[in-house]
Image (cartoon, rainbow, N blue to C red; front, side, top):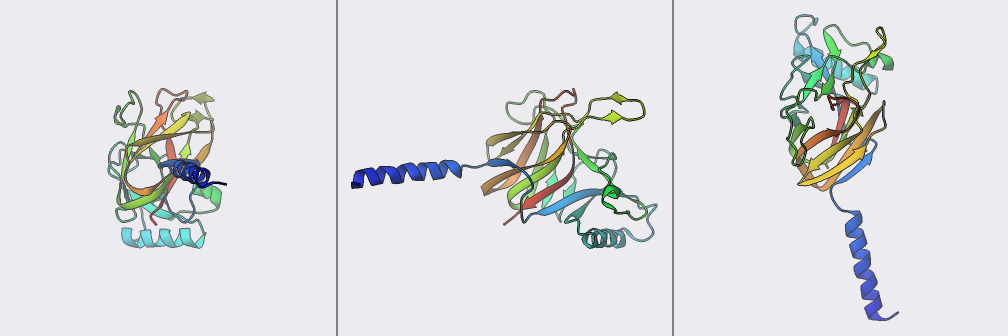
Length: 233
């Protein structure tokens, strides 16, 4: 094979490699080696000891049950603006709230201590038109205090169904989710009426991230989530 042909193949291979490694990348599933958080609300009037002691007890309980999650405490059941987790590692700037409707940890044989509740993250009340090019969506804005190379959420794309009244009130049914990171937009379809992990990765690292729900049967066009993970190195 002559040198010209070899050089051409090397250039083609390099282009393919660069294309394969293009950032950001979106995928289904939870990243490996990340730190995973779940949100909890603490009612200081009902707990048996101090908030600091209750947080330690909750962390120990989750570790003992091998849940692989760290608690992220929110201040209220609703409208919890500025939620911060992991000592400021992850901060939801505006438009992201805690929601009393929860994915119940009792299904995983965990009994929470008195005064503690697991809550969902929700973006039902976010302002619109935050992501460039989006005219209707409900967006959330996340900042990190150090570079994050992978971020994942366990999205709930189901609807709000009342088993007692047999009525579906809409709510969080969405078709897909869109991420804006480092000036680029990537999007992933979701499986209807289920929960699933979606991961966005960028080898350059992320300090700022927008998430936007797309489509769906609900006029709310929003979502809930119960866990999220970050990979920092």
